[in-house]
Image (tube, rainbow over all chains, first blue to last red; front, side, top):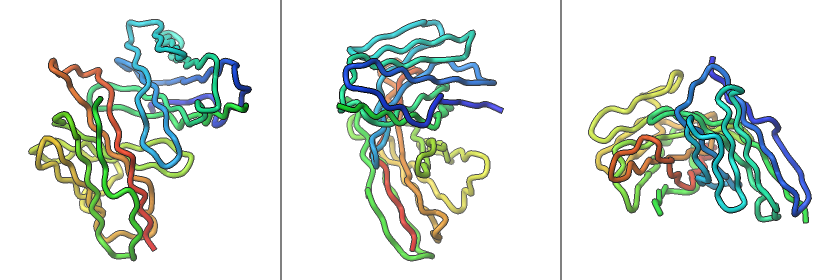
Length: 110
Length: 120
């Protein structure tokens, strides 16, 4: 069966450090992979999309890599800030079939 | 940017009541909307795909008679939880994909802020 696993339920880091979150998947060949941010009691907010033929994508302090051989995506937040504290979800899929990982709850301590 | 509005944000009602949740795309037309359910500290679980002008496609294990979906226009989809019971209490979230001028299938989904449903 298809599985999407985010490496840890929770991640605590110090302000200024780089946060690295992992998304692994099995029995899946996604056309693209997306990362979302979700705050408590709110809907997810889109951050980045990376296609299967792309290795890396950046947006401000965010960087995403996509390794289709390892079936893994890494999501980095550089120079992390307390305001980055949230749950981050990876999502894989195609047009009408997008599936989410359980998320990693990131806490950035001042 | 694209905005999806979901209403109401919070519902508390008695067991046996039917509850309707609305999902609107505010600045784009969405032929397809998605309904998710999320339990605390768990992933979003896709319940059904709502298609404008046709029947919704439900995921395995989701009762279509329990969760009625209507997508009557390009900007509105509704989810009705019929005869709700305490086990239906959850966080329900809708999303819509803005296809853009070329109907690009890789466009991200835009989510509403969810509806917290509590059945007493």
